[in-house]
Length: 439
Image (tube, rainbow, N blue to C red; front, side):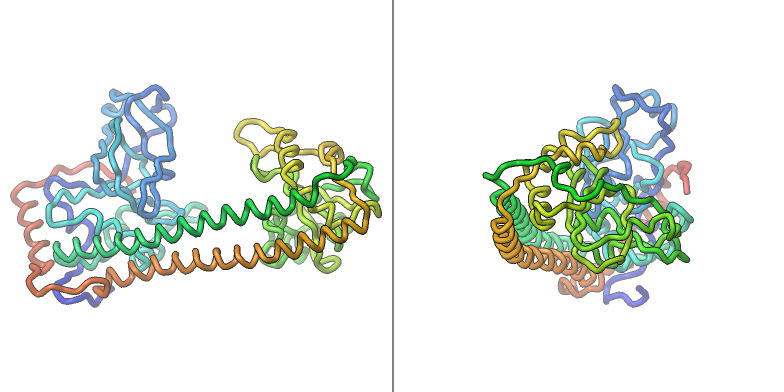
């Protein structure tokens, strides 16, 4: 970030803050300071998105408490920078709201308050790949990574002339609006593919006599074993994601320190069906058939192993367990306390009812479903690749924007050095007040 285009100059965030501006951390607001009936909103990390205000939190405090704590009240247009992941250093513009608002200490407030700094230009730069790399290089902490305001203040910014800032913002947002439209179409296509996939499965699992799974198994159900991930361990265990994504490859396997003798009966075998006994309300009871090699990995405690007998093919049993009717059954039967992942037990799994067509019909339906789903999988993969390309293109646009390659430089633009000189002169004439910050 040493070389800058003609007319640009290197600066720090503090160099861009006018006499009425602000560059500070949010405030220490503890749980005891909050009041659900308060009239001051507490903006939190969850609200700060990568270029967007997410508006997810619902925390409040009373005005008198905010005043007593010496909180800084936000203004519409303030930049909010997350000093903790994920991702670290993401920034958005506060859009304002009906209530007055303050923000938590791990959110940094940037308020240039200067008519020579385009707030949206600064926001897009803070989200650009080159600045994000600088942020990651200056993060600190062991278990919870963060960047201090002091380190954030030390990072260089290539500042273009004011009118070029405006042109950069217009170009970024024009390109991003096109990508937004493309991504909406891709998201719609993804939803339709999901609906088609569900319809294919449901059509193959309807119109046949039902039997409880407990009558169809050839051995008792079995829960897996919980083992800690270990850098020196040598016993592989599937993760929950292996079932959620129906992908039992190495990417969804971890090495653990499990005792081989204790788990010798838990090795996955081809034809085993695994049911998630705990997950989010939408995913609890998700089932997947394992078709990999013998003794590739054991399965964790959050999975229940199902081994069916000769009356139903494992491949067809999986279709039944993935049907809408069975998914709704598991969601209704799942139990859990508020805030925890709901669970289903073995009795719930044993009581699930599966369709039982003749074996030859099962084979035909399995082949038909596999063929149709493979087409949808190919289309879904194409959608995924397009979304990845869109994400990469967004990064490239920001890279081009802040290296002077997205819009042309205009010789008539006043150099950015004069912009910074004006800010320095303004501050010396009207010094801004200092406030306590937290790093």
